[in-house]
Length: 192
Length: 192
DNA sequence: GTTTTTGTTGATTGACGAGTCAATCAAAGT
DNA sequence: ACTTTGATTGACTCGTCAATCAACAAAAAC
Image (cartoon, rainbow over all chains, first blue to last red):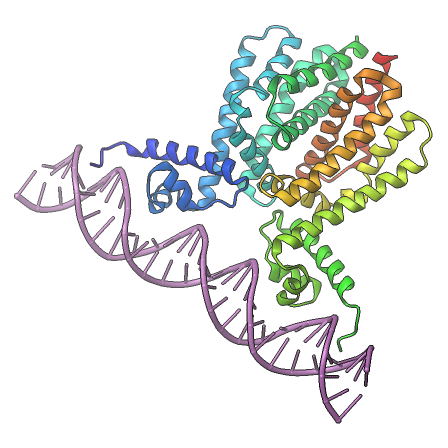
């Protein structure tokens, strides 16, 4: 039965199962066995491909980050004005992909996990830096010096809205997006 | 050796040790044994007073929430104008007490924990509702209808700044407070 | 046709941790 | 004196789970 070239398929399935499992359990206290079962393989195979459980967790995080990064890049590609660039970042941040309950749960847990895990922290730092850099870049032509400051505020607001969505009632990307946009508009009105 | 009336002392010590331990480990994957050792007692005693580990965790969360609530109430007591009320809430939210690394870590972890635990979720809901209610109440005379909307934005911003502090460089309450105040000022300028 | 490589698992190990229990010690009550 | 009650623990049970291993199946390579 064993066809060749299973590795990428299994890896993808395991990563996907990991995210789903984290979403269901609501924490990183998730067993390799259950992840493997969900992916339709034995727990031994998960270890075969990923080594330690930690590596599987990091791979899942990397996958989520990569998906988000792709989304941002894609949205940014079609934006010409600075204002549109910011809107694109917001839109990508609250896009359906990153907004599925399981993905939100995974994000949230990785945030926490990054506190005690070097690899996770590095990954998250990359995301943080990139988000800030993108925001600063788009804000500079609009508000000059204040760009760095405003960027940090917007980034915090994005994160905060994310978390509230994870806890309170069902996720609502549009509303979160609109909320950040409203704050942004006020920033720009003042700077004008 | 056994004096009477140890219960409240032990409970307090265990709760304190729990928070410290969570802060050190960076997650809720903390053993009862280590908490107990830190509090200078045996793990059996921790179980004797709190039953399950979960109850100990919830007690720690309740303690943090209560401390925060006291801070808000105290700050609110000396505020006369609506604007001062909001400032008081912000000041309490980013006060030194709630801003110690271990406490931040605990907050963060409880946020996640609330996803899968009913008791934790209830506690967090109380905090959320109270924060929102306080903000709405203070905002109403300033912005009328828009109070609910602005309150949610501010609440999210507070949470977001909190998290960033937990991950990025050392906590800086003043700066976080100023950042929210800046957004608030813009809200009020528009409404005026 | 044999060897190597890749895919896969059941069974097992070893560690660790939550929760229980029986027992001990000392103070307070009678 | 003696009995109840609160404080406290070491030792033990029981379950869980990550990680390993030996083994097998099938395709590819030689």
